[in-house]
Image (cartoon, rainbow, N blue to C red; front, top):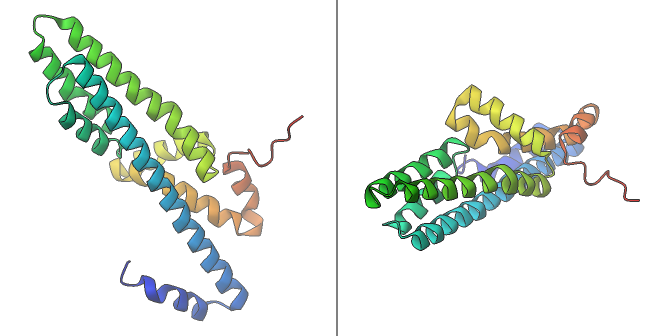
Length: 192
């Protein structure tokens, strides 16, 4: 894909008449911009998750907090399953490290699950919806559908696919109502 990128615009101009070629180029640039924005937001939220995990585990005295923070950062890119997998090892370590005190492992589980749930279920859908102009419901439905269809790969690609579909619908006149319904709706909400 990267090798073909320099020739993409000239191929579009050659394949379509002037006005259609410009529209196709505008749509592809918009899709690339949305995907870049998505990856940036995901990176920042993963950094936040890793930093919170590190801070909490350090304060609680769990060994190797930086290791668990890096694991949480990396696995945060895999929706839903990644946060569960990232929570298990530090909890198991806390069970061993603080044995026979099981309360500490329970506290580690509770705090890490709270971090993952708040960021994954509230902060991320809100930021994605606002910055990508996608409804949080569309994001969740896209995650469920593409995750079901293609597994982890589909879950990773679900938001970029939804953004691309919305952008394409935005630029095809008879599909514009679908684009409006997929949007966050903030541009249409009247105050007062």
